[in-house]
Image (tube, rainbow, N blue to C red; front, side, top):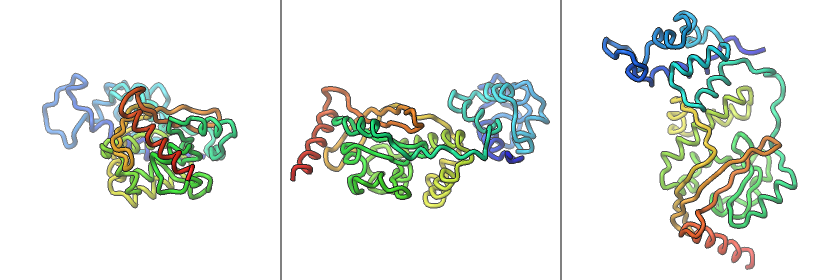
Length: 286
């Protein structure tokens, strides 16, 4: 049975309300305001719901709302697409919270073959918690050569991309702009948590990061949401130096995620990536 109190919904609504300036919604900003952003009655009026009802949602006295009401509140708070989707996920009941979540810890032989065949592309398969289930040699060499190549094959000890980015100094040092990378990690994890609110392993991961990283804890409390599926990252790799790589994510049929990094063709960054591949070949032929 779904919990009566939905603290995720209440705290998220407060955070989003406080970030919206009154003038953004065509309201006067004059008068004393105890907190930044909109007042509750202003959000209620913009969303077309009663102030009492909205207050109950924000104070976690009402666990859920209809999708129509949530969409109205999303418009009032000027939420982006990912933020709106997250609000819908945490603001509506889970269909069957007692049903076990899919394990997402198995990689099919054909998927493994695909990853291994991408010689000049750094590729890995992750589950939704961002545990690495398999990686090709280039992904391993790019991100974590200090770990054993067989690390993803050991359940319970698999590398986790987000955990490494916060707690592994070797991985942190790869990113030229670690502040942006860390925020991207947390906004993505927040987005994923909306889909898997009853996953104890995900809750354990969030708890561990909150305890061990003050930076993670501060970012997590901001409740920013984004589904980061493509973009560009700049690395400072200890072997080949500066690397600007494009990344993309693709959903697989089994619920896992194919993540791959590649460089712009005929660019210095592609040459550097190929150099890393050559370095791999030398290691294999010793």
